View 1 (cartoon, rainbow, N blue to C red):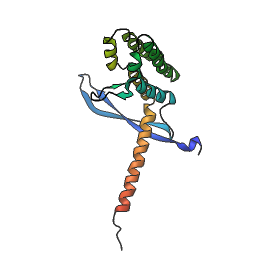
View 2 (view 1 turned 90 degrees about the vertical axis):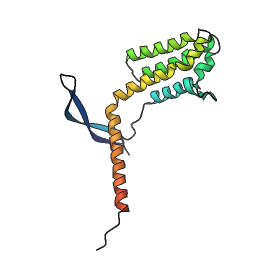
View 3 (view 1 turned 60 degrees about the vertical axis):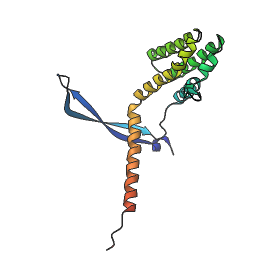
Length: 186
């Protein structure tokens, strides 16, 4: 099956609510129809998936028994004075690099670098820094920045794919109901 066979056009209706001069929502809705080409194999890019895996490994890989708090390698390796935080900074910067590969805007990459540096700086504060590191999950924050940006850039494709899958499910349900209906015999 070639790429054109997998790609289908789906029309999406976008509702946009108008706001009146008084600040109240007007009851009028305008319908905007756009045609979006959807590839059957459309999914998150590998760089984003790798960043998600790495973010989870670094920030929430292990659940502490009885407490229920999740920690990752960032916390555990960060307990090693000096070198642990430096190693984890390198791992955090790998997530920033994956954001660069995704072509995330530089303003968002700068925000990601700031998160990584805050996490790194906290490691130099004995005990208190390690406790704060339990709750300041810089890597997961950076992955959320990447996810939010990617979803906003691909919203039409995501919506079209969801609509296509929903339409297929509705069709399957309709067929199933028709098969279950008793047949009238003449």
